[in-house]
Length: 564
Image 1 (cartoon, one colour):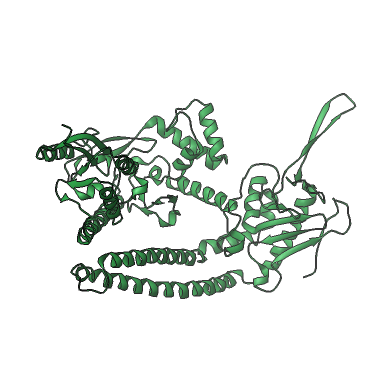
Image 2: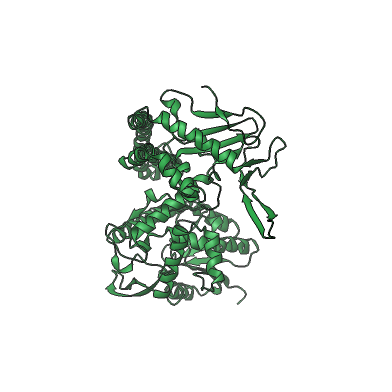
């Protein structure tokens, strides 16, 4: 027994659907038969990878391969056996993994491809071609899967996976091409009521993710995942279009660092599935409008790079509170947002009745030495008066035509950049096709570059192509954002003529909505206030910022506009 080679097998499938009762029996049986055909071999151990992609993951991302390499360095086995080379890897870099194992004295075998050697230059080249072909097959498979998912989503069909909160999986009565019984979604009445509660709290009461999670936990409502409701779970429910009866894919950019994509980039089903509607579409759209508006307020860098159209918000940072300028009012000394720092005045009347009145006040969180507090009446009264004056000036110009003109100028610039990017994409694509056509000639030794060198060049150009396509998509998105729709102009037109009447009749939340649509920020100092409007009058005939100067040191003395 001592002279027998110690053999370890690698069993791998890339998805849960390929498992049979959470196992990989076919590959195990094939490798066992192969070992039985070698009298000098003896099975020592199995390495099993369940639902691990050898195409999406590199060697460093696969813990099992790292464990195999560590065991090889410790000389724990003599042979690594897999069913096929693609069970080991589906990328060119796995060629070097095989070479390293060989250099440590480990022979690498596969049932279908035989021994994978790296002793001679031609051996390394053959391994490289094997894994290069494996990657190509993975790309084709990935494209077929994506195309199939796209067609299912467009047709309004469930593509598979776990049922979203609010639904259960039931048999659809249909069978897939692989003989599997397909599932469909059915509304879970108890959970659907919770989903409606979440949307109601978010849309109608202005609750944030954290406050909704606390409300659900306080009410003893079982969580969708884990042991309690969390912000991320609430956020996910508020973004999922399935609740209005539409499936969607391409909601995330997959990779090592996955990120959510803007919903303009999502691919939705072309028809609504009315059987699974929990939230009416207008309510779902309203939730997205609120969410996107609040997120936009958190992106402090927007003022430096975004256009006036990208900086248009439909909702303030928060509709709560009694101070109308919270979220847009900033300390002019340290730049931080002013917060509510009101207080209560307590007194006793002649008849012994205790009374209290709340005094509204804005405070700097940094407690700046120059000035830390501003009274509500003083600050809001001044800003409201300047806004009335601003709107009076705005009526004197044809805002709609000027905005269209500015939009045309911006789009022309983006179009020039997009055209140049498209030219570079076409050139790179042509270069890649040319290099790919030379691969067979390089393998035969009849080309000036080796197959490895060509593959590296193709990979480098592929990365450049990927980056250019992202730039092009970004430019197209920017062009879309510069579009001034009839709806935007209608909102502006309805806002300007009767703003005073609407504003005076509104409560604080409505005032915040109106101010957020007009003002980007207000900077307050002891010697003056600067108001930055979203639609800049200087783009038409004057200065973009309206500055107000104090006439004396009394905090209740009204400011007067500076001459511009």
